Length: 517
Image (tube, rainbow, N blue to C red):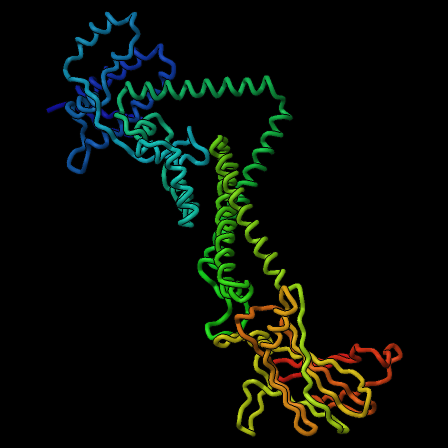
């Protein structure tokens, strides 16, 4: 039968055998005595008491409620002999004192590695530094890996915030020892406290120097400057994320968002490029230039924002940013040169005119031919989705919006002409493309039937192809167009010999017609 006592160790109550309590008390007294000249002695003793309370708790369970002597001896063996840390002046007395406490051997404890946030060496919240301590690798490697996760995975920021919330901060010297995987002994606790004290001294000295060298106004300016720097860093990172999303969706993903009526839906950037650029080589060049601009811009914005936030300044930082900037400029030059080359293919206009016929009648009737007309006489198509101006079928591009120009005839006949216009870098090429434009026009009796759209080969590309109907109307005669009566009136500003039309009109792809005086 053994006598027990109730003790409170750092706020936790324990039942402990009396001889175990006496052993523990002697240990703590020796620790305090041996550390009384040490800087941070109180903090060391407090951390050791916290560790003792933690280890005592692990010795108890539902079947054991009393801390026994062998438990205390095991705990003290884990913590180490405090006599190791006394000054050399007291070494002789320490050997004598140590001989009185040979009831147990002091050994180092096993390592208890845990993940903590190292805020003492943190750039933001200490997550990367804590992971580097846990795996015992350079923190730069962790930060680079994290940047790659952020950029390519897209979830790096959210993961960082989660770890910021979940992973505890290393508050005590024991936490810092666990974070580094070091044994929790009196020696290691003392070293950790001394390192912390040394860091505080350096910080205090730096702060004092700042106070001597800079006035409060300068400090406020520096704080404001730091805030602005971080704000710009976040702005650049958000810009990089936005560019990355756009790059993945519109370029790599081939998202079809450009309105056009095709068998597969809208047009993507790649598809519209194939219809605008002159040849497949230009398409490949555009891909190269576009990728250079996009990827370098995304990386540049992300790394610049990251460097601004963490205040990372080095030769490699500058070289990386300049390399990305140069790559982006080269890609931009490629795209601009390609744009100039494509624009050159649209500078010269070629136009051909075709005579449809001449007719002597009191009224010319114009009927639109709907491209999807029905054979059922009881059905009349009122609309075929007027917003669609471009449609791609097979190897042909279909466009609508047939333009009309009305002039005054110089005789008593109606004169009907059709012009087709296209652009290229030479007149010959433009005329050749204009000849490839197909448009349905039929003049039978006093009725002019006109298709609502025209088409041309995809190989001719988008080169501002247009079709215009020119109708010369005799004086006092009219044109009937979908219920609209067109008659040229007197115009004081219109010269009789002028080639300019007096009135205009436009036939839409759904067969509707708009007239403009």
